Length: 362
Ligand code: CP3
Image (cartoon, rainbow, N blue to C red; front, side, top):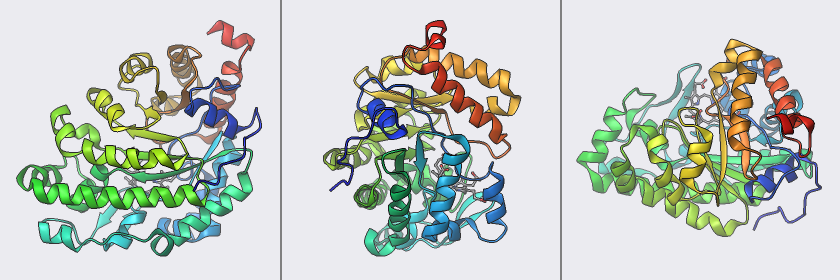
């Protein structure tokens, strides 16, 4: 059962965030950044000289400290737990490491039906106890102030890494496995969907106010292939989580052609990137859903004026309608100046504050 039974106070980050997720009018548009914890923060870089990324994620007090860094630094409305989408896979029997600036590397990739069968289901209380402890620590710190976001990779994005053995441009190995061995593929998706569901449920029980499913590489699929090979498994995750009592966010990139199918698979909020206009995307997913996004993160590399122009356009397209969560279309890039993120949070909060003079001008 969820621990989010108290009604948050109006004007807090958590109230703002949950209002937007539930389609109520928040006092200002909530804002946070994917990949806010980490690479662009000097304090994070300093910690990384002593510990590798997975050690940070697996040590609850360090994980909590890194999770809280961007909340203090940027005053965002939500903390996203510092982990990686790879974290639940180790308990399934996946042998992995995270290579700095490259990404996850898997030493025993999945290439056959027998490989799929060897994968175990996880027991979150055993296999990811460190993560649940970190959520409890963060929750205690932020309770009543900021939202705590739990997350997981989606079956497709995780399967891409598991089959490829690492990052890939075209997902040739993963997609050819999908086409050539559809039964083994569905068995893999099914196992991942079960693991992801209980992993997210455990995060909710530990205190996550909202959970996000990252389908970062879903844009590699045609609509017909998504509907056939992926959507039923994602739908099962969201259908099961619907009873968990917390809102869900469904994120994809390069997924402009899949928006209706992703929305049909589930999620109270659909997170879109900059390749689609926010107002067009919202019309397509339906006004009954919330929307998250969708500033191009590379705008921040070009300075404040370019960032401001993009942020203004996102807010104008959202049009002050309830249900918008301001975010980048994808993660913060490591070269981003943290001062610009802070300024962006201030700008969005002031401009979107209900009744503000700036809101009138948008
Ligand atoms: O701040 C946060 O959002 C919380 C932590 C978080 C990390 N990874 C930490 C991390 C989250 C939510 C993720 C999700 C994740 N990881 C995704 C989905 C989101 C997305 O960006 O599409 C994906 C695809 C991964 C896989 C991954 N992990 C890659 C491709 C990389 C390396 C490239 C990179 O971005 O640096 C990682 C490593 C990783 N995960 C780092 C961090 C802070 C960098 C670790 C380091 O060297 O310090």
